[in-house]
Length: 433
Ligand code: UT7
Image 1 (cartoon, protein in one colour):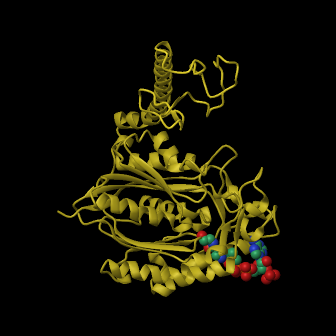
Image 2: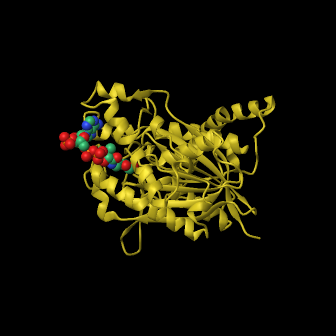
């Protein structure tokens, strides 16, 4: 029996705050007319001071789980595609996994910029088709405006924040991802860059302005118009289809002119291309999943239809995929008990997370008690030098000879060779390392 990974649920979230072109024209030397005519963008959503990528991703994740009508504990995998993570570490996907209470799921981020969602989708698909996972949540989420220099008119008018998510589930019905193409050309990395804050140019204090997003718009434009048609054609032919078999194209929403040029190169009418860049601007990795959600919710996607996703972005990267739209369930129940169950999941996940944190503290206390008792016992039996009294922490308190201990001053015993060897407590953990 063949295994397929079909999209069984979808959801999106964008911040409440809308910034119009007019508002931008009061901040930099631009105009609604310039932005509309060059990009098609009319407005974008922007995170507020307290929001981060994981907040948007978690909300989109809940919406996708509700639409798939499954609980978070059923997930085997949570993947977040983002280039604006909450932190360098931990991965945003881990924060989302915790917030959702997806306690059985592995979680990691993918950074392939605006192509990231299709990359992540292909990874989740492989995990499901191979049998390693049954259910995966794939999210594209960005709070990319945090990296925007609001004085740079050629950049700040383009981007917006948001998140979109899909649930992929194993099925034996031929559906879901039929083919995909992933590509990169790092020689063009400098065309679209967030230069500072990594190991090459480590952060110093607050992010300096030149640590923001830098782009050679013309070059990226040229690259995008060249690669989108090529990548889509390749993915479509790998699925054994032709452009005429595709019912809906969902391209990365960066610029209406780029989308129109890709449609032309594929020789498809714009009526077959989903566009919502006017409402959200370029939301990077979130743009394709947000477009999938809107296309599905607005009736553009019908069961059995073939869809082609096309992404491109920093890296440079590109990714295209074909999929057969075949949700497993038509309409998730909206009954009152179901809604109560759904409503209760987020607070329950929060409680679960607090319990896990408390368990870790109790485990830590227990380990510390065991360690102290073991040291006392060894001292009582006179097996350790007498200055190796139990330490409460790594700050040297508890030293009986008046010498301060550092974290590395753990109790030692002499080996036959005379080389000090660290003492291994009964739980097997070498505390000196
Ligand atoms: O996810 C991938 C991310 N990036 C992209 O997809 C971006 C790809 N590139 C583009 O979409 C386009 O290159 C832009 C929209 C960024 C720019 O459009 P363009 O038609 O390539 O404009 P341009 O760079 O050739 O600039 C034309 C003029 C310049 O003035 P001069 O030198 O001709 O006097 C710019 O300084 O427009 C000026 N300009 C603006 N004017 C008003 C640049 N930005 C603005 C602005 N408002 N916001």
